[in-house]
Image (cartoon, helix red, strand yellow):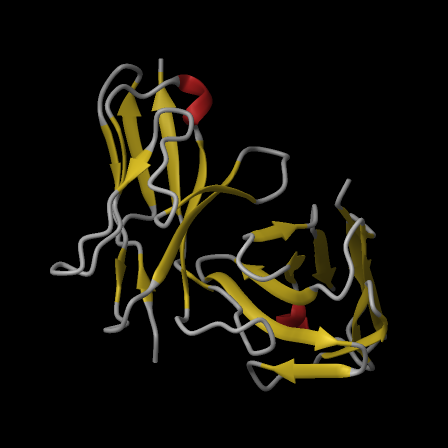
Length: 111
Length: 114
């Protein structure tokens, strides 16, 4: 069956520290992968998407970066976190027109 | 820019009352529209899509191109319907290799009172 794993579930990091959030999918090949951020009062915002290994597109300029080292692995990173990076981060995947499947999310608090 | 607008941040109705969650989109082409739901402590999941013309958990949504709306409706609300609801829009012309990231509205928090 197709599943998506995202970890950690919660994370508290100091300002200026690095970040690495990981997302992996199972049961599918060559999915489109996405990172969304859900900030309070702002809904869901698409940050990055990837249509294949090593292919990353950014939707908004920001302090974050993404990488896709393997077909089913998508990583969200930052070298130095800002307070404004706090939020709820969601990984999602899709294959053609079959809708989107979301991970359970990571609650990031930058202090 | 494409936009999805959900004018209500919070909607509170009594159990058994009708529910309508509003969604308007700004794209002028032939859109694909979705409703996603996030129950407390659960992941965001697809509720329904306009292409399927389906009814899920008693909810329906009709695409009105004239009003550019895709409102979510249920005739009799139940307590388990309490959740965060997101309307989402997907650009047309997706071919499997391009950008197809959904544009989400800001969400409506639906509370069903007993």
